Image (cartoon, rainbow, N blue to C red; front, side, top):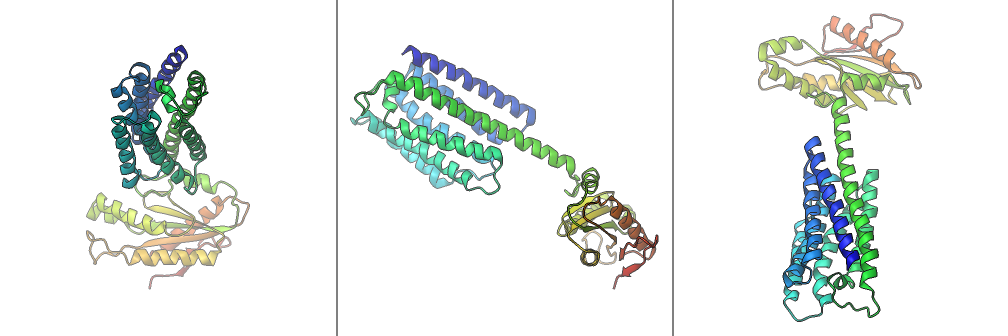
Length: 385
């Protein structure tokens, strides 16, 4: 059994290294839910390897293995679910896993063949892991790493299924196969399963890191108050040649400084969030490009359609009443609209829309004005009722 000892200790070292990596990633990125499940699973793997090495021939050791193996796959399943944005396993799967594990413990106390004793807890492992792998395979819009997790998950399931009739060999007990070589089984099977399980753990860590990178990228492109695109992200968007024609709407909340001065900045922030929420319901990309100034990019949209969208937003905001402000103070915003052609950046249209916005301000606010390139001072076409 010298080969088994070497394999156990080697795999144990790899698992301990993965636990250390998980802890370092958790401390560095402070994203711990999936990592916590994975670290718990890896810890169970470490204990299982130690039991296989030192206590597999005792009744207590076998009972420990019967509980540890389902726990390993349960923890791994929850880690995969958390990292892929899936809900945790439902109660029926959890109860089924517990019931099958308990059945194995009962059979261990009865005079039945070892193969039969070990079947239920391995079925528990298959149940919980198959449920998660199928849920992940059905997920729409999977990340490429999620696809890798699906492939590895099914390979691990194949290994667990093949292990069912051969598992007694790991404990030096007879198997249904008379010509079976337990040493060869350990050499090949444990190595393969060790590689698959290690690959699965590495894939989970990679998915966690990918999630963190996406989160930081999202944060770097979003305005903290409104969750709209910030100025830098919106500028990058309009500096690229447009794939299609469209329009830009520039918006500014009227007399916002007076609202801030009279009712306080917390009320001003709520007004900004309310306007941003209305804006985000329209167009393709909305951004906060100044304190109370916003921009809305509309693709495949003509100038008249864009003006109608701006008017719809204007009316919705004009009818809004904030409890802290009261009905005596009306909220309003002014809008400038300009069009752009396909294949050119929308930056020029944004400047034209900005000039139209300030023309709307000069004409009395709470209105929509379309930019006219021939006229440096666009005239308002839509006014407040």
